[in-house]
Image 1 (cartoon, helix red, strand yellow):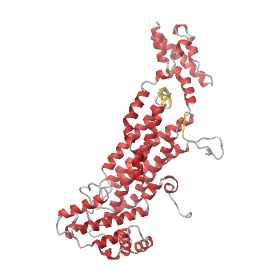
Image 2 (cartoon, one colour):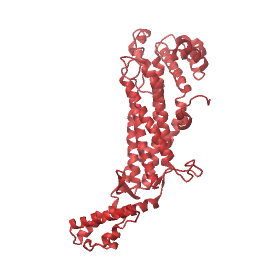
Image 3 (tube, helix red, strand yellow):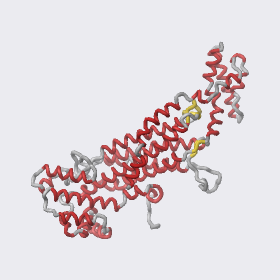
Image 4 (cartoon, helix red, strand yellow):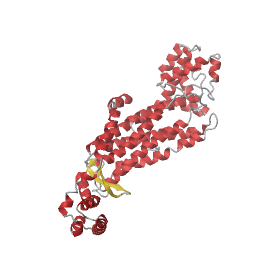
Length: 471
């Protein structure tokens, strides 16, 4: 439909997997699976529910009459009861036992927990792929000298690989946060209207162990090992805050990386992928804009702002339940997942095709290396009998003059100026022998090697795990 608003996240950016995960079919079929699981557990624990009723419910999980749901919701103004009604119409023999003892949050909250857990698992694999790409890139260029920048001003040399390792280290931190978040996603279970399980005490004639068994059975059906120990009508909204904070953290790291690449692409040192027939500008045909990195930054800003929704919702929950979380969560959580997915897909594309212009980097290093090497030059001059303080003043004076020349468009003539100072005691040839860039990158190459090797085990099962999740 082209006459209705569509979210760009669904039409342009997010993956088919994530779009399906947060689709109406997945959500409402999960509701029905939850009702089937509840009915089966209640039957197995002695309530008057038959195997035939459970099987009839199972047979109609995927056949949802959305028109029926819409008509019924318009009448009763309650989405869950509209779906209960439609499910009962599809499975009439079981209509009377659907949702037995439960409240709406049994299906809405547990379904959300299932979707968020599966979404986090998928994003974990997406994040690992970005990290694997960066690890390969960092190792390949671990020893390539490049000009470092502090305050975005020329500084001491680093290496191209070391800079990528900084981005990689941020993402490793995000992976740790994501793993912690996943570990702490628990199930709500079926706890009743205020979390007291009072309705089930009545149904099971006061047998508390059967209630615990019921929740264990349902949790196990959906791959959860435990429920939240206590809750109101909903699961704790603190979890939503933790999830969106985790997604925001990924966005922050990807923004930092993409912004660095944008700066480097301005100087033509490093470039994001650019296809053969890609158009950079509608007017300036020569342009090679870093549009993927710009899009990462744009989406990341949205996600970081979106993450503010969950803490505001978590902080304003009244006592056992208030419904002012619902409309906000319907938007903020799915959009947050789709946005994180889009960012990581773009980051995979960028990191898989980063292009390094080594000649440009070499030229930039060569231009600034005389300044960077001045301390080493001074130490060599001291070894030859020079006075440290006098040498420092010579370097300062010559450096200022060379910089002024460069600002007027001239080449760097620092070495010629120093060689022309008799009291400096070094010829141009003496100084050029000290201008090997690799002498000024410190332990960059070894730092990258050590770091990359330490995280390589994370990528061992990446391809197999990605295939499993997408199935």
